[in-house]
Amino acid sequence: MEKAKVYFTKKLTPEAVIEMFKVLKKELPGKVAVKVHSGEKGNQNYLHPEFMRPMVEAVNGVVVECNTAYEGARNSTEKHEKLMEEHGWTKYFQVDLMDAEGPDLVLDIPNGKVIKKNYVGKNIKSYDSMLVLSHFKGHPAGGYGGALKQLAIGCASTEGKSLIHSGGFTNDQNIVWEHMAQQEVFCEAMADAAGSIMEYFKGNIAFVSMMCNLSVDCDCCAEAEDPCMKDIGILSSLDPVALDQACMDKIYQSDDPGRDHFIQRVESLNGTHTIDAAAELGYGTKEYELICID
Image (cartoon, rainbow, N blue to C red; front, side, top):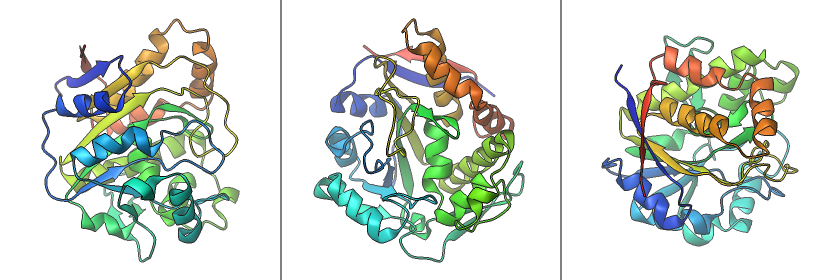
């Protein structure tokens, strides 16, 4: 597989997000789903809708999310819709909770390492393409959260999230946390699920990742640590594997005093195994050319 192109800028502005999408030279056809993280109630690190607004408007996109499988303000359609309003998403955008109503769309994963099917919000069928806007940060379960997590956990319904977290054992959110998969299995299940979304959109997908508010905790945490590193910039690619690898390389190459704390979170959970598994499955490559944009 040829090296993927990953673009990088130190600029961190709404206009820079658009610029980093445009350098991809990718036309997203038809109706565009823009995958964001809505941010758990109480979280201080998630990227706010005002920052995303110019990019979403530039592609005339619909902001999409799915419900969670754990306790909080996003584990039911009613609560999640209320939070999307509180966080300002519905003020600026058309918002679609893709699994607001069942039944889920079931995507087959014949070559999956762990799971052979992925449950996603059925409203994904309304879209011809997807723009994945990721906030790169740490994560208390996956080690880190980036483009692959946005595809895997982010697009999965509550049932899908349960199946991934349990390594294929159950899609029942009431018992999933009693049957958590071993860490390596969980990472591979995420890679399987991410690949199913890549296959679904058949190349009509692009990725932009913001490396800012670099906490070891995810935007899904109601009580998250404050950022431990200074902001790095924005990266973009058509390859989510290369993009996540490039983001991790930026962390490892940093001389920031908080770097070791961030890396400890990732390595303690074998987080980069998700990248390795997705590459092995052929959903992208870890080999990339980094192109700096002034």
